[in-house]
Amino acid sequence: MELSSIAFIPDGNRRYAVRNNISLAESYALGTQKTWDVVKWLSDYPKIKVGTFYTLSLENLTRKKSEIRLLFKIFKKQLDKVEGNSLLEEHGIRLNFVGRTDLLPKSVRDKLANAERRTENFSEKTVNLAIGYNGRSEIVDAAKSVAERFAAGKISLESLNEDSFKEFLYKGSPNPDMIVRTSGTKRLSAFLTYQSVYSELYFCDRFWPEFSREDLDNAISDYSERQRRFGK
Image (cartoon, rainbow, N blue to C red):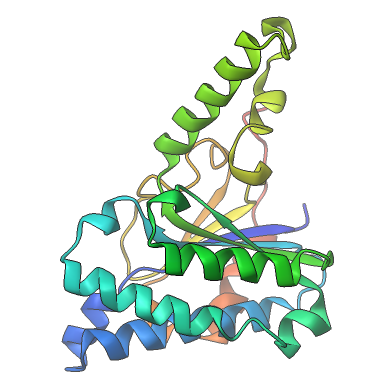
């Protein structure tokens, strides 16, 4: 089965900083640039239409205020690169931001909205960036939306099933064929909880800032050798 949707848990930025005796700011900047690198590498795989990155979890928002301010500063700097970005334009890459973005500072939300507007007409590929995200929270938010629609008489319980429920998830996030996690940690950490039930998992020992094109190629090659039965 062809790989059309791939997701990443870019783990290990802080441990990379400690191991290499660099500042957290430097490590996060390298990690953010690595995301751009991976998006570029994915563009060489025409059949991969969706890439999803676990950018910032809800739990991450409880870290030290100084670290969160640093992250937001880096995010805003990177979001400024969207305007006139040749990679996005050349490959028709649309950006989506999924999660409880209402919890983010207005300055960050404004830049997220601007990035989405600038790429909304691109349709060849989609890059989802999960920010302020938690898989259980996504399901809870979807359930609230279902309840509101039902109360308003816009949906019947009979019409609700696993497929129709997906429409209430954040921007219809697709089921990833494969989820890649770096740093050697082997868990999903509440990432795409509803969508990942039959995703193939691939764990890479490298920290995210050192993730290479070869690592990506190896993950995709590994996927091509697997047989997916979906429980059948």
